[in-house]
Length: 218
Image (cartoon, rainbow, N blue to C red; front, side, top):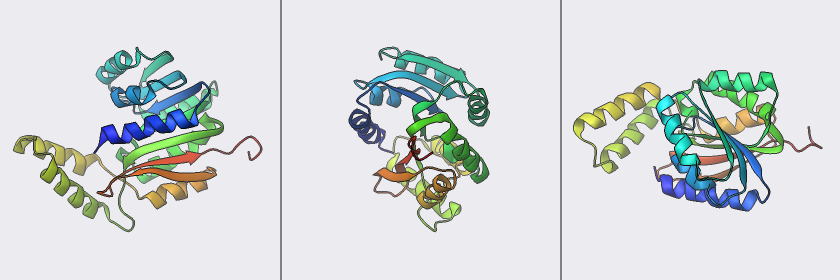
């Protein structure tokens, strides 16, 4: 995965699309290292990050400190946190980002999350998804075989034991969908427009944008 390339594109997109101060929620923020880089020199005003790892959140807090915005972090499970935010109805966001997190969920869980996100976005808000995807009509096992072949070929710094651990994790935890499946879910749950901002040459990693209705359309 070319993280520097992906988040460089994200940075330029943020600069082009948010001239005014904006609020952001990140689902599965990890240590937020690449997100902090993408948000540098943007108009970010407030940031909320959710992740299961307490250790990662401590690093995320440090990574976000240089940015001139209010940043808060919550340790917790993604699905539960989304439900909690919807129930509280205290805040809506201009932008929601999920980066390499949703592919760990089942299809039913992805469907559930997509159905909640629109309730957390402001009118005309945007959900931005960076993740791994299957090719159209590709089965999960075929995707895993293709992806792991690339890992074996290009992640040359891994020892045999490290590769085995990576393979075990991917086979156990990765359940990517196709682009068209996410587009269908977005339409089902009321997003009005979709577009792909990035698509890698391996046909595994994409950055997709889903636009909430404006006030007139809701």
